[in-house]
Image (cartoon, rainbow, N blue to C red; front, side, top):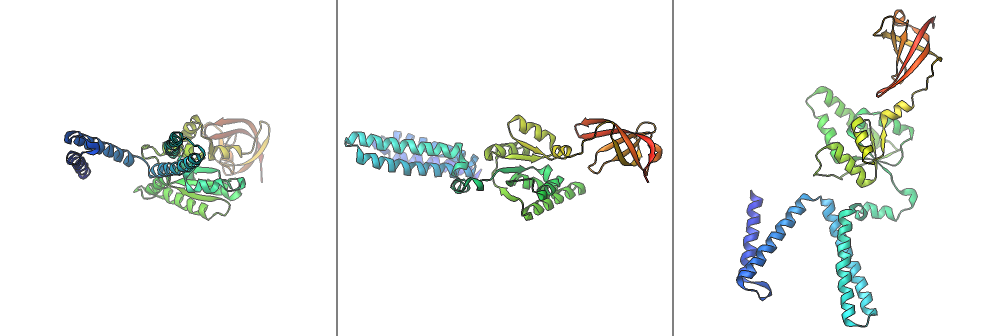
Length: 330
């Protein structure tokens, strides 16, 4: 309500100023109309500025200023070269209009080009360029990313957007004990990553207020930074790939690292519990792969040698089916 009153005051003041002090030798009514139009334009600009990100406003201003400087310099050079005064004036006006406009467009469409970090990296050697990898909330809470980074397989810079960090803090402050535990685990994983000397972790202030969904924000952020997304979220994985974003899925990595087992091979497993079918036993490999064993129900609590009969690939990983041949491993 206060903002509306303030806007009305601006409109009234400029309209009155135009009426009593009409510009361009206009009549009082025409001057008031000019004041009203200018006030409307100012309010429209204020609304646009409030909706825009500070980052865009800053880069657009910097781009316009650079355009003015470059246009003035080029205009001055051509002013001394061209002898015809009318031609010289036209060229100076052309540069002073064109280059600020191009700088303004550059600041809006390619804001990252005018950021200090980009300008510094631009003059660095190619070996010092960074490749950003964005972490989503699920992969941070999962925690396996810390183990992968310890091995040195992840290169570049791990970026955590502020909106992801905020979501993680909300989970850590949840009244639900399980969610709260998961959130705190995620914060511990982030702390571990920041202390890891093999990777660099940065917190990105890049945000998209007009986008409400965190996953959609992450995709927009990846497009803006030309970054990859590290996740284990199945839906985010599919949506990001549909939009041309490269995704590094921790679950896919884990499945790829599981040992390849072929039918007919012999395995040694510990029968942990009974299966759903008659005489079935269930075992698990070290990586969590389920092994369903026929004729092994009576061998629960025992380590046995089995023969692999088939391997089934599912959406959550592999399942191995085998048969117990009566050989007990001591």
